[in-house]
Length: 286
Ligand code: OGA
Ligand code: MN
Image (cartoon, rainbow, N blue to C red):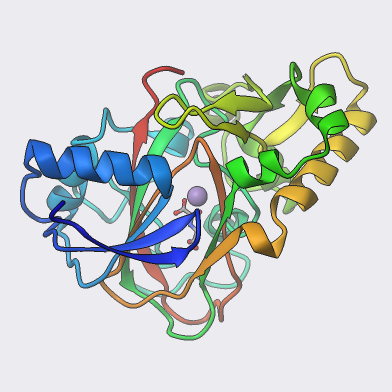
């Protein structure tokens, strides 16, 4: 074992040292990271200043790249590597977005509990988020363990949801926040998709909830009942004991398994720069 691990949350998050993410991963290191992710679905690396190409290359070692919401938006990005998603609150001229800018709606939607790309098929497996320039005060990111949340459900609830299938839609969260700047064509590129509410992670054999703010319906249930059930499950699944809160330093890299965690950003002063970049893999089995 060459990686150095420091547990940050008993079952959910671990700090990983002893690896340089800029270098191509040897097979042993990749296997070690994969088995660490099977146990702790959130990995934190400090002091990893990655170029966009290094960021994409590291992510690609875990699977094909997921385009996510880029499928619905032709917006020009400031970045040259199109595999990397720009999550900075900065416009093309390098200025902080004005209050009320429609692009901010998508960034602000990241403050709602979600699993990246749960609204598309295939959905996401791992996300790799690089903290480039953080405001220093606020803007933390929280992760909630959906395996532990599932395990803690009463048996009657496990039986009730065991075969339910939810509909996930990319624009549900944006609509909740008053709408964003997507065109009808862009929205048509990401129609709703269905995923079971309970899933099993192959690497660990653990059952997990799969919910979050992209869910807008459950097949076979009236909308109001479905949404109340989804809200109840989300409230259960995001209790503090299931949550790790990451306080960012510049050059942190945080990697997580979207199949069994939810995450959300926390509020920050929107007049300050906050620059993060994300690269995500597709889940081949989905
Ligand atoms: C993301 C995301 C939260 C944050 O990168 O997918 O949801 O804190 N980020 O910016
Ligand atoms: Mn996200």
